[in-house]
Amino acid sequence: MPAPFVGTKAITHGLVDDDALRPKQWSNDMARLMGDAALPGYTAFSHTDAAKAGRLLLAKGPVRIKDVCGKAGLGQIVVDDVEALDIVLGREDALTLATHGIVLEENLTDVVTYSVGLIELAGQTISYWGSQNLTVDHKGREVYGGSDLHIVRGGFDALRKLELPDNLARAIDCAAVFDEAAHAAYPGIILTRRNYDVIEGTDAAGNRQIGVLEQSWRVGGASGAEIAAFEAFRAEPGTSHVRCSTVEVYEQITPPVGAVVYYQGVDPVVGAMTKYAMRYA
Image (tube, rainbow, N blue to C red; front, side, top):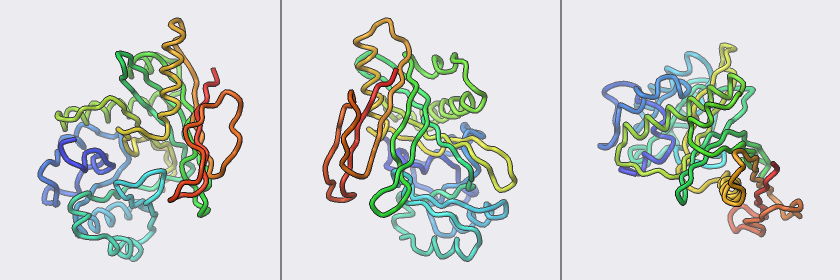
């Protein structure tokens, strides 16, 4: 990454206007190249710009404010009016804002989140589409609970050849556009593992929307399923498609037969957990 913010949610959206504060390495090309592959929203690096962006978005409906470094669905809050917006933004540290930024975007309801990914490893390339599951952590919050992935040999072009419903095809296209835009806007990045969260949901006007929420260019929640797919393709040269899943449970359980357990114990931060991967087909 040429700068820390490039690997976060910050690059998903553009700035509120030409005068908005930004890091030196910020590229305006990213938002231009993304087009409508992300939801309506803004990234801000100051309280003033965030307040302006929030007010513009509130004119259309509720706004989701997101910590650009948040994981597992945490670090997010939805506001419905200017008073709530200003209270939430008032809690943000100015230096942290200037360094990392904050995201404000249109809030959707009745949502499903797709995972679309591409990984290059040991001379092989795989790609996938899938969906995410939610679970409840020890604080009673709904958080990431695993991914169910349909994985093929090859890149996004291989995924696009599958016969899929229009919403899934659109989700794959959005992820591919994000991937291409990121490489063009920040040519110094080196990516081998790319996972994109793509949301489908209903906006305040009652319309269904699909757009990229964020990227994950690190080892993530779906990585166990990705590794299971690489192992299956290596062991079975004639196999072109597999279905694998990861599961995260906030307790110590006995996983199903055939599961590969990659964590089971009491994490010092989040408490008891079991994480495992499975191949189903």
